[in-house]
Every structure is written in structure tokens, then in C-alpha cells.
Image (tube, rainbow, N blue to C red; front, side, top):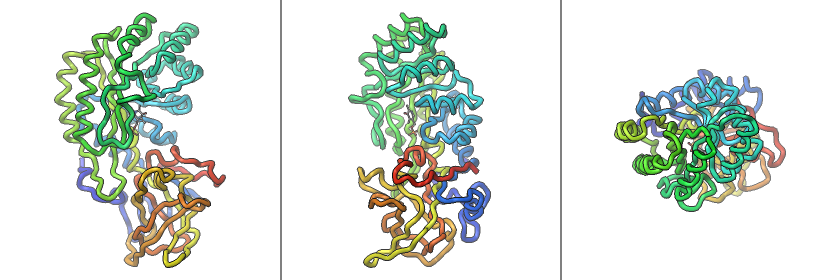
Length: 411
Ligand SMILES: *Cc1c(COP(=O)(O)O)cnc(C)c1O
């Protein structure tokens, strides 16, 4: 595999021909014509494929790779990935439906989420997928549903571990959390699962997300395995599934380096013999969202107006925070940094200037690039936001200001 580390700028994975960025084997100008409107998201099939292959090349063969649908639930993207990964993880009945429309065996679809409703739980039990139970309420509800439907529910127990994934952008475990059951309560729940005669599959331990520090990921993995080995003593049946989460991050901002998967793969390799001897039935699963799709996607928006205000140049476009909340800075809660941005139809332009790129909304939060050096652009030019394949459209307030939804294509 060519090494992700060799790359310094995210746009380098999209070739340039003449002045124009290429995606899916065609120029951005041509793609914009084909989509027939701006703004739009475009995801590159070959980059998705290469990314799954890269993960597979780095981690031991026995590890199952699952795709977390919430990172990008576009059905075409999920279908494409379903042909390459070992399973899908969903977080709602809507995502479950998308997963069930793929050829993936329901036995390899799992459902996590802290507030699964009675209706969602029934749909999941009926579909024969594996439920990650996250509370006593979910356990009791699933037992009732299983009885009513005459189906033995397949369940895992999601644990809120007593550690967290350090250096992660988002902590999903450790301390007090709404996710999973605290590890202290796990033995009692495991006992109940056995007593209720459920089809116990194993454990789900997800500690965090968007981590670029391989050492922190390896430490969390070791602690996850140690925890699973401890809890196995309380399990009502063999652990057949051990979902250890993922947390693999991608670089968004200057100074961030791509995650090197090789040490992580070697570390997993080191653990495999221990797991094979102590948890011989366990299928070890990593679940990845952002890492598989984030770098394969771009958001494209057209410059509508060029405006100067007190010496500062603004490029005002037809798209913005309502389609791409993350690039705009997530409502200003954190120190805002620019995503990688380029003028996609002027990649070779030597005339450059510092500009602020905004969207059409009536709020100063609608920012795409703040005082960034870009090729000199005019109305009609196409602004590209890279690293947009994950948590882009799906995590944006598309209803805000009632603009039309953007296009979305897999090319
Ligand atoms: C969101 C989520 C993931 C995916 O996280 P990424 O950072 O996109 O890889 C994995 N597991 C669970 C339980 C999640 O909620």
C-alpha cells in the first residue's frame, strides 16, 4: 500500500489535470455539470476501496472490520462499503434499514445507541441483527419483545469502560456517560442475560473517536482486551464477538499528521495469540466510520459573489454551514480552524490572495474559510472543501434558513 504518511496535504489524493481537480476519473467542472447543481457532496469510490484495503493490509487477517454507518449513511456509499467490510454498525432504525438493504448478513450488523425505542428494538430483534444493550431498560424491553415475537434476541453488552481514549477528539467512554453500562454493573447484567436465555454474543467497548495518536489507541486497545478478559468470567456463554471500537482519526488541520496504522496493526498482532487462547470463540471487531470515508469526500460550492469590505475580500457561495456544519466550526463552540479548502477549477492558478469564504446564511457563523490564501476566484468558480466524506451532510442543520438540500454523488 502506498503510505498515508507520505501525503502532506489532503488534496494530494485527488489528481489535478490542467487547472482542474479530478474526482472519480473526471474533472470537477464536468462533475458539476453532471450533478446539474451546486452545492454538492462527491465521494470517490476508488478512494473508499483503497482505504478499506489499507486497513486490511495493516491489521491482522482475523480482525473483522465494520463500517459505522452514521459517519456517512448515503445508501450508495454504504452499499459500496458493504461489498468490502465484514459488517455494519448502525445507530437508528433508519440506518438499520439502509444496512438491511445491503447483502451483509444480519448476523454481522450491530445496533448501538443509548435511547433505542421499543419500536427500534422490535425491528432489530425481528431482523435478527445483534443488539448492543446499553441499559437495564433495554435488556428488559428486548426480553419482552423476544418473547412476544418468539425470537431469541441476539445481544452484546455495551460497556462504559473505566478508562478513556486519550488524545481523542470525542470521548465516548470512561467517567460518567450515557453510553453503555458502567463496567461495575456489567456482571449483574451478564447474569440477567443468561437467566433470560438470550443469545449472548459478546461485548462492545467503544472508548473514543477522532484520535491521531497511535500510542493512545494501542493503550486503549490493551485496556479493552484486559477488561474483556476480566468480564469473560461473568459471561453467560462464550464471548463470540468482541467489538473493541476504533477511534482512528483523520487529519483536518495544519500540523495534524495522518495516523500510522502499522504500529496499531503490530500491536493487535501481538494480542491475537492471547485472545485465541483465552477467548477462543471471539471474533474481534474494529468499527470505523470517519477513517474509512472522511478523506474520500469533498463538498463543492459555487462562488455567487465577490465582495470587498474594509479591505477584506469575501467570496460568498451558495453553500455553507447548513450543509457542512463541521467545516464552519460547529457553531463556534471550539477555536475555529479552516478545513483544507481550494478553488477546484483553478488548481494551477498562480495569482493568489487571502480571502474569507462564507455561505449564504444570515449569520457570521456561516464560514467556510477564514482569511485563507486561495487562488484568485470569481463568481462561478468552484470552492472545494476536502476531508468532507464523514459527518458532513449527515451532521448538518439542513433545515436552517430553508435552502435546498445539496446534491450527493458517489463517483
Ligand atoms: C460513531 C461511532 C463509531 C464511529 O466513530 P468514527 O470516529 O467515525 O470512527 C464507532 N462506534 C460507535 C459505537 C459509534 O457511536
